[in-house]
Amino acid sequence: MSGRERMPSVSLPGPLQDTLSDFEEAFQVSLRLIRLPVGELEGDEAVYTSQGFQASGNGDAPPLSREVLHPREGPPLAVEVQGNGRVDAAAVARVLARTLDRELEAAREVRFFTYELSERYEEINLLYSISETLGSILQLDDAARVILREVCDVMGALRGSLWVHDRQEERLHLRAEVGQGGDSGPVEDDDPDGVTSAVFQEGRPVIASRIPERLPGSIQQEGESFLSVPIRYTPPSGESRTVGVINLIGRHGGDRFSAADQKLLAAIASQVGAALENNRLLTESLSQERMTREMELAHDLQMKLLPAAERFPAAEAAARVSPAEQVGGDFYQLFKLSGGRVGVMLGDVSLHGFPSALIMTLTMSAAGIYAREHDSPARVLREMDDALRDELETTEMFLTLFYGVLDPEARTLTYANAGHPHAFVVHADGELDRLAATDPPMGFAGPDSYAETRISWHGGQDLLLLFTDGLSDILSRGTRNDGEDRVLATVRAHRADPAERIVEELFTLTAASDSPILGDDRTALVVRL
Image (tube, rainbow, N blue to C red; front, top):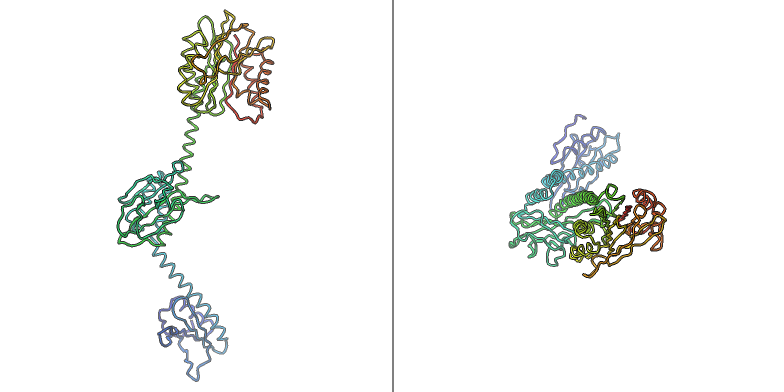
């Protein structure tokens, strides 16, 4: 400090006083800051004057330089600088004026943001609280109730409701409610008369001084204000979309909702939108995981329903079923019958996947009953068709089925074929006999269907080969029959090998296939008796 005494300033911020003092000391000048008149205000008013400053009317007063400031708030100000002959007073006045102008603007911004912060403290605290709520409460419905209650408290709303969209149902469902409400929904998302539906469809907020008649979750009170804001989710990439709606109805004291209230509620809705989307993705993920586990269990169960062909005691047999999905409609059965006879069955339910697997399970159950009750393959198929007819009609599915009985003592194979195209006897010399279908598939056959055919069987030499079209189709290279030809050529080449080796060769062939044909269930069964 220079040791000069200064007159006290009038309502002059502390940083400005410090700046004036610093300029005095640094440049050894005298300063005066004057508030200039505005409007009806008359006369100048000095708000800061250095000790030793001499008025311009004094004949001995040093010359002074003057700069005028026009702050964004308050009256204009004049800065006067009296030099000491060693500094440029005009230059000091210009620099000081610019410095004071910046400090006045900074002081104005500090006052503004301090006011905003104090005014918006509850709103900022609400946004922080909502973030904590969404991060700590796992159940979204519970979080929605907590959030809506806090929103109503901070914004002074009498009632509120939070609606979430279900994309499959194309409806809005009420997930949280505060206060006495009206309709609990659900609300059609395209309801032309509903405000909530309109806000959802248009993705724009609605603010008004009177509640519409079709605002769900509201009881009409004369003159009540309402605010409806869409809940939107913006993914990291792609366009944002509306996932719900928040309604606030009525305010304590009869106040109206404002544009600032709408802005705050939109910020809250954005947080809720991200939480809703995360919850949806989590739910879908858990559902998918649960479905995957259930399908894996269904696959294991289905495979366990099939007999272990390699351990079948009455004949040398091998088989493999490879569903196109976790479960499928292909199956086979082996029966040890009286008199040393062996029953061999293979079936293919139309389509694949879970519905086919259900039909397959019913078919295997029926086969286990009727194959032991009747010696005639045609009679077995007749009984099975009667048992499965209603289910096949209801599901609009059908079933190809081959059932043959090998009698080593009579040296015969008696069979009935319900539309199954891939059934063969492979002789020791490589010759093939196709066991043609004697009747239509189950689901198409009438009450008079099912006949049977008997052919000779050379025990220990002949092979019974049964497979489904999924096996031959995946080996197809262009024509309809070339896939079947490749299967038959492989079996003929390995006809002297153990049955298990023959099946292994077939599935090795399919694993190397690059066929563009969509996959179906693949099954092969080889029996030697």
